[in-house]
Amino acid sequence: MPAFTATAPGKIILTGEHAVVYGQPAIAVPVTQVQARAIVTPKPGGREFRVTAPAAGVDSPWDSLPPENPLRAALEGVCRTLGVRRIPPGRLKIVSTIPVAAGLGSGAAVSVALIRAVSAFLGAPLPDEQVNALAYEVEKIHHGTPSGIDNTTITYARPVYFVKGQPVETFRVGAPFTLVIGDTGIPAPTKEAVGDVRRGWQAEPERYERIFAALGSLSRTARQVIEAGHPERLGPLMNEAHDWLCEMGVSHPKLDALVEAARQAGALGAKLSGGGRGGNMIALVQEGKAEAVSLAIRKAGAKRVWVSEVGR
Image (cartoon, rainbow, N blue to C red; front, side, top):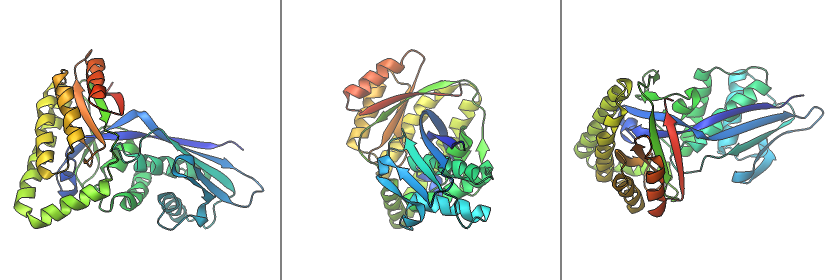
């Protein structure tokens, strides 16, 4: 019997991180240069459905995984949705080139790839809407109170304008643009940053609401300039967003150093992306500038660099 394979891209947030949890819009785009892959190989005559994820040190029958394990949670979600009590014998292998805890949506990408591959193996490939809903439930294990932007962008693999609790909006890119993504190499556990922001908001609601509103306004403007085909106007918006995120307390000296290096090398704008406290930063670059900006942020300490084309 043939294997069932599914892939899912990474994602990066352009604007609106953290504020999106509090009802403000955010924009995210897929990053196809990195991806998660799930391969289900049927084992007729076998005795179990086994899960292997070498990078996570997992090699176990699926129902022996801890209840809080995200892979088990995703499998249980597929079974519930399809009304399946027992998964036929086989092996699920998970591999990914998306770094963990770096703001690129590694957990959501693994969930989306797994859900698609396993539902196909079970004879009922799930539509995007159900894949997205199941992946969101798994995101709660990773992030506590997730916005849903990671699983949505990754499921639909298109730029997304996202407002929590409202229908998904993908949108048109009027002219392609280039992002350079720099990884600080510092793990950025989103759950902790989200929790700290929530505690800050509870302690100083007026101050944090002002920051959230400013970030939301930047997201609305960013969508307008992207759709209008003027991506160069994103630069100043990204710079301002980084300032607000610093005021929120979710930046890091390494992130600030990479952002400054990118700007000095000619980037139109640069900011942290994702939960902060480490993870990634992004820089908007004109055509022909990607190499120079990449080199500059490597010299400033970036552990990994990707160049992502949006809308091309």
